[in-house]
Image (cartoon, rainbow over all chains, first blue to last red; front, side, top):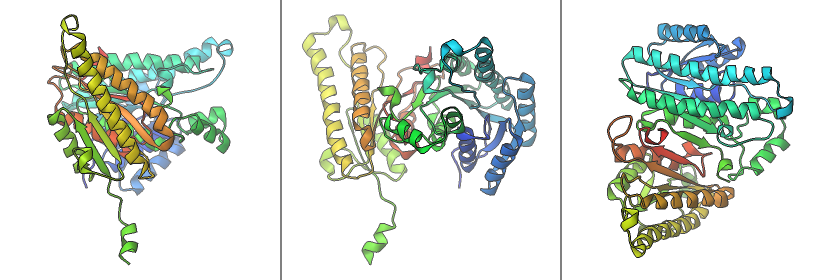
Length: 255
Length: 192
């Protein structure tokens, strides 16, 4: 069977958990060769094993996304082991909740280094890597509903995701002028039940139910839903889609 | 016995594609059909449960604003909004019969120089968002697909096939958590 990304090489950052892990697995099922990156070696080995068990092709590289040297290592290893890069999913990110008054300069700088500098490097090195193939490519930025609307006690996080929105649109405009072009779009998930959320708010059913009740579709967001949207934005189904904000939030942002 | 066998078959999904833009409607119907969806081109051809409704709005109208008589504006925009509203009401009622929710997609193509038409696009957009909030608890999703017009930063104008691929995504379970949202298919025009 030929998948929607058959034979194409895609780098997925933050592929060890949550949305990234589900995305890496779905892309592999759709025929992509997936270069998974993250900070945890054991989790990285586990996701690669899952993909290989399903007949897919994947590698894992340890990756601090705020480090340009790490990015260069990831790209070089991807090109050597899997081939020229078609796409990048800039998924890895940091999140914390803290009232504005308690958010220190170090907190603020730290989350910017990861969420904004990491995203910037992902686009910059993604453009370089895709250009080496001589073919078109696609980049997906995993932003957040919180890059579109405010959220209490998440000043720093919302600011980083707002920055990613501007980065995405500008990169899309520049990417369209490249020969061949590179598409760049941002995905804006609502509340998705992942370690990023449970580590801050707690991992209990009552909380999950409360988030669902507060969502027009009355369901909790699952990583699989985001993986489907990321697959769409990478695939030829969206060949004419670039520079957009795709909100997939169960209707939260429509209120 | 035959009844027992039937229960194990996948449920065929059913769609109605209505609207005034024949080229787009044909492409959308083709894309849905390719995904195994039964497609009707009017509510008259179908009765009973429905999974997908696609309403395609006209892609032009009175222009320019200063030279448009109020009755022409009212007829063009009011008529189209009312058609979308009626399709939405009818579609949602048929989706309730499935017991598994459904997906409504409004397609409002941009029109390069029909400025009065922009009001229709935004009217449809807010109708979709309001309907998403109202129908969400029943699992009925309502979204917009907004095709661009003319040359784009990516190059040539987007084709009906480009738009249809996006509509097929929003209509499908691949967009299970997407409602009240916009999907712009314009090669980067609106990013500028």
